[in-house]
Image (cartoon, rainbow, N blue to C red):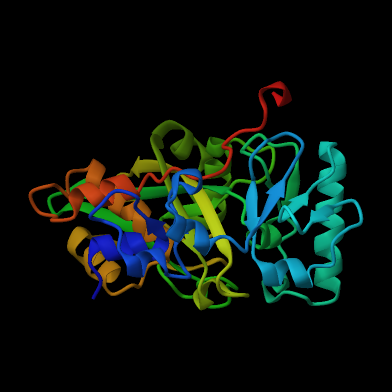
Length: 335
């Protein structure tokens, strides 16, 4: 059984720079990433000293980090420059050329089956340098470059005599990532050029058969949850891939007589569970890791989790909103 803080730390490979929260064991863990690389002590910098930085002309800081074994096995496009002395992988200056170079690289890697993660090819493009980026990359390959990806997660719930009841879906057993695990009511990645709320409307119809009018009129934006995840075997493909993410979070209160049903093959079935049942499933690690964080955020905002009943309350709240060591938007003149 996991505590709430352990669930957060399992998803957010977090190293806190402020004593007494960091330990030598945490600092030397291969699955942990420094909270703020530029301010990290030497022990933390050693953890990432072999990583290559993904660089564009648009930024004077990294937009992603690449592990050495990925660098060595990737069939890089000649448009991409690799500087081993500086440990940099530099994309072309032109955004369209950068997109083309990434596409050429990943398509060749897929054709030669270099990475198992690419077997889950989605034909969806993700933004590379922030939500409004003009540089895009195939979704399945984003974790190979360690870039920030973005998504929407919504918790749909009812409220009546039995208190809050949450609609919980079970992922399909055939999904390439986290098969058969529990999920948030509606969740999905934001594709290039898509606004978060429009992504939510689309995903709600696809996954939960929720009419557009109900989502547009009822879904309430509740901020973001951010974390730096390091993928394990449940994610599919190679383990140890770096996946920093920011999720735009929404709540949707539904009438008690509403029944949610899957609309596509990504969801197996829906359950309507009370808080205690959801908490038990969380402790038993039945939820997809990032969905556990979104539910804990819901519990905090609805005063289900409080400083009085949760001994790790302050750590949990802080770690649900991690500062990521990447740009969250392109350079200003890209707008």
